Image (cartoon, rainbow, N blue to C red; front, side):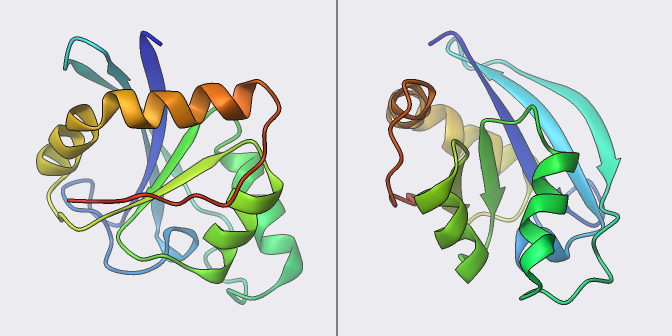
Length: 134
């Protein structure tokens, strides 16, 4: 796998939000590459921020916003991350770092692991693994 598209929840674009991904103001989309480079693609507003975190339509609405991401990145695991891992083709991961450059570095350091999980999902496999990195 040459490239992985990430979605990172952040309120300020500098740090990963300390809350669940679906409760952040913005989704920051990055492509990371096998050669340790990364490219910021865009910032998308989270129109679901006012929805109750447990609302059944929240997951669908968030995934519609970040439809082209393969990996969803947050600082906290959540019941919705568990549902996403067990029922969709998206790969959630949890990171301990806060600053975006550090998060991208951690993900680059686990590129083979994450790429393998993404490849399994692209082949139609659905499983509950949510790596915690950092």
